[in-house]
Length: 548
Ligand code: ADP
Image (cartoon, rainbow, N blue to C red):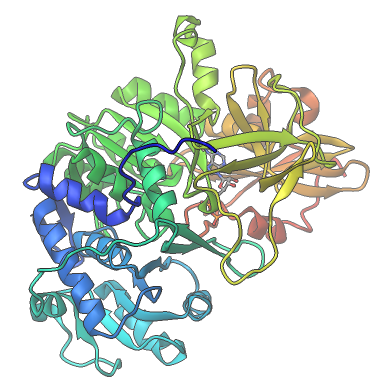
């Protein structure tokens, strides 16, 4: 019989992260720009105390282990207190994306059977409208103080978050329970069909938070000032509220104030060193900073992911502002981190251009996740940087099943079961650097050859007149599909279709160059900031290509 270790084995619980931060970094600040408009200063000790009060308050409202506490909220200290207060007391924190359509929000809340709904004042009109449709919600809690409660509201019995907490002592001992207990739920955006719930566990969340903080991942330390632009309502803000507790650093939360000016002022005022978000956020911030001839004084590095980071944006952040860009890939079903692009010792000896090519890829897996690329028959493909295939993953923080779905989404690779198909198409090179070439549904299939829409978008984004670019498949009588470039011009910029097409010359194989260009005022985005190519495709379904 195997010899058992003689080590302590406390379960990996989210409450242990907060206990650690409170005990060892209690005075370190948590700063929130709130919906009310003020800049609120708190610290880990205070947030820990209020999280315990929140746990007591949820219990007083009748919540029992496993019950879902939903949020419709921006990044702020009260959201943190709900994260820790609910999960820590064996409830499940269900973050809902407020940018979804109201019907989707109702569907998600009913699917998750939420018992309590906590929300920021921004969403009061929304909640007033949907409250009668939320079948399982027993209590509605406005995340504000007594002074900011509305005089009248359409929500009977609306509760005040600060009042609920103030009524509790905070003398609460975090319970111990199985680390595989559910801690939070996040639904995918549901670009096709109804959204599906990913149910994270305490164990997966703590392991993910550890890994995310590693130097080859987000490289978090106590000396950082972290400002997650990535919303706490989607995939737990990429784990940063937990990793920040592990390292005990200052944490800055921007609330609803996500425009370039507000962000820049918060970065400067609070001496932010590290941030994370989707590419569209940086578009806004960079435009503001450039237009006003400003420089960042403390901002040193950022993780960009959620969709492909255009190389031109990476270059501008690096060369104009001295900010290190860490390109990352992941998904809701992966908590979300899978890969990050950080160079190895050997690669640091390569010429600058080659290093840049590597940094533009989505990078290497962190321990805790494994990946493979496979063909349509489930056979793994070589890691040669050229063969592209369906990307599959497995690991400590990858879902095994969706909430309320019995069937397993997992598939076999070379006969070995237990891999999650990501729906992405990728190459992996000999050093293990993965590069997403497309989402399988966005690939352009031209005469049996695949064309990567991301490659074509990246080239367009490097043109000085282009603000945003999407490349979609347009129907073609001979080739089946051909690439169509959809462009939003920068304000005041002038550029013609011919100039843009000529810009591709020498940058990509001739047969991959888009057949046509259309200029639009705006590209639609999903609730998580990704370009909605499906919508664009519907819009331009009947676009007549000049080559057709
Ligand atoms: P959704 O709910 O919209 O699927 P996710 O955040 O789960 O939101 O999206 C995950 C998907 O986003 C990935 O499967 C991939 O297609 C895309 N994605 C994420 N990061 C990157 C990246 N760095 N480059 C390219 N695509 C990315």
